[in-house]
Length: 196
Image 1 (cartoon, rainbow, N blue to C red):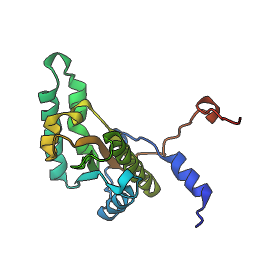
Image 2: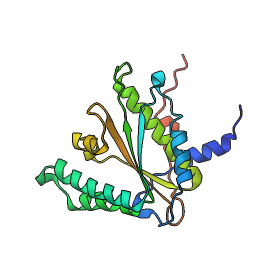
Image 3: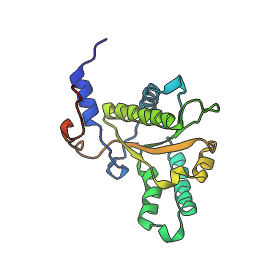
């Protein structure tokens, strides 16, 4: 099986975290989201547990509901002396300025045969697959993980068990202007070659 390695390299190296504040009002289509989710399911996972779960907020009314819920959850789960008006405003605003929002969680298997960390890692891989597919469409994505997503109140909002975990809020939209550029350090900074 052969793939165009140059195109694969370009796709991986072009993916960016693009915050919703940089999205246009152009709509992401449902069939595009479906392909992102299908590709997300092809992430590696020990024991074939497929622990990823997705809640897709597609309509304006669904994203409005999510916006209100995130604001409420922030106020409920953040001590008064730690609350920040800017963070609260951002949580409320972001679902409204995104074309689509996907809440991603890890569904813990009842038998707990696979270590939890491996299930979390599998879901993280699935999110990257989703983001790479978005990038191939020219759609920006932003994986957000505010503290409130790890609370029991968030689990209750999502209707998931106490052993499950919300792992991210994925905002999707077409970016304004040129696609952002970035760079990475050479591999010599983070790689040790064992040759003997």
